[in-house]
Every structure is written in C-alpha cells, then in structure tokens.
Image (tube, rainbow, N blue to C red):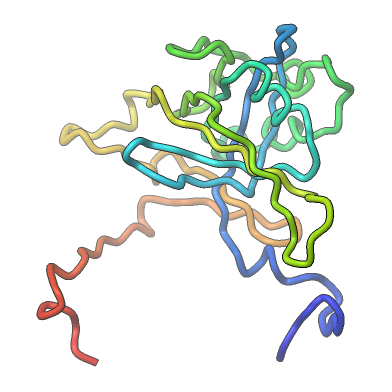
Length: 208
C-alpha cells in the first residue's frame, strides 16, 4: 500500500509507528526568572559525538524550548520503565511556572556543570549547553510548526550500578523506554542486545 496525507488510506497516520522506537529526551530547563520545566520529547536523539551533541524537536515554542534559550542550558534525563508514570505525568500541559516535578511527584538532583537539575530517579542524564534553535520550515514554505533545539553535552551522569567492571554502560539493565506510534512504548532489555562490528574495508564487506 501507499500512504500519504491526501489519500489517507489508513485511519491513523503511520509515521510515528514507522520512525520507531524513538528515545525520549526528558528535558529539564530553567527560565531566566528561575522557573523550572520538565517535559518528555520523543523527537529526540544524539546528532554527534565529537563533541557530543543532542537535539529535541518541539511542536511550537513550548516552555522547554523557551527556557533552554533563556537559561542557555538544559538536561536530558533517561526515562526508564521504573520512571514511566512520572514521565507520562510530566507531559501534562501545566500553566507556566507550575512545576512538573511537583505535579509528577519527582525529586530533583543537582547537576554538575549546568543550573537545571536532573530527575533524581533517572539512572543517567546528559547536561547540555544550548547551541541553537532551528525553525523547521516545510518544503512548501510558510511558518515553522516545529523547532529543533540543539545542545552540546558538557557532562554525563551515570548511576554506578550500571557501569560494568570493564567500564561500559549496561544500557539494557537501565530498561530505558522508547516511544512508538499511537500510545505505544517499548523497553530496551539486556537479553535482546546483540553486537556487530563494521567491516574493516571494502574487501572485508560481506558478499552479496
């Protein structure tokens, strides 16, 4: 079958079910006035590792975006199966200035190099300095509905329980949750992990 926005051959848009599962950026940010916001974003990912950079994409200029720009910093805490209820509650559309941490009964923990706190129960967090916000203008022109926020990671918090003796992070043991389409979520589990190494060169590539 072929689906597009005009023909709508399915009753529900399949886009988010196909670009899935997506990691969740659980973003905390402080405004210039010191107001604290916490919001989960499934349009989130790493976009570079030298230096380390992440992005999240906001539909409209919401508080996380505005506060990241005003304060120049934000933190991405790792959402896990154990923190799923708090993550979901923190997505509620609260009035500006009302704390999602309080609403979702989540404790804060201080960051090391930035002002916004992380989620205390999160097993990992990325402390970021805001770099830029890019309006995502559609191909046909017009006003941007989405805005991509890019930050550079300046420090990473990792719960020691999830660092192996070899110095590797056991991601699966943290049981991060990822977003699918509709109301679906997925978990990452250690037993589903497998390893593949890139070919060393063209001569080593598998024959077709």
